[in-house]
Image (cartoon, rainbow, N blue to C red; front, top):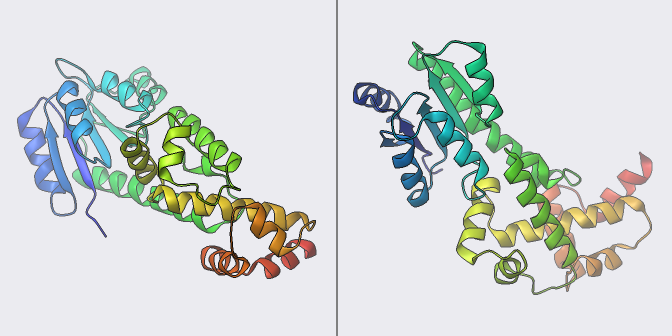
Length: 255
């Protein structure tokens, strides 16, 4: 498993060095001394989580959080805000901007470590739950409004083109008006799936919906979701959901 990359943002060099020392055993640690530097780094590096101070020159933590959560390229990245401001108003402001956690200074490094680990592991669990559960919607993986809109649009686009057996990342990028590398990066960052894997899972989830109605034969469903071969469809369905299409149909009938 690859080591997650964490970006630390604080104008106090001592704090950054201390936190880097605490975290570098488990994570790849990148450093920025204000929000502007942080934005440059996340534009160049695959950052999995941001820990940012609130009070900084150039661009503070609130502005950074707002820009990250509002930009479709970065909106999936969890943000932990650190602040010496203990006022409730300040916490509310951070959470309104989409911060995933808020930690008051002074704080224990253990507390920060647990918050980071929880945010990262929760995302892994959510991704696995989406991929392995036939009827769970893709929106379950959204971490922000921007993500939700992107995933809605992506899901709709794939489902409108399911009968196209040649549907791939090139076509998908064209339909979504995005460059292929941007689309690939975004899908991978949110779901840990390649676009082709996501297309296949979307086919299988649509198949599960159709099978659950009990109105179609397995071979008909296979055709309807863009499979050339019923055997291939059955194998993929079993591999993804741990149940054959026929068993799934019987199970739904009995519910």
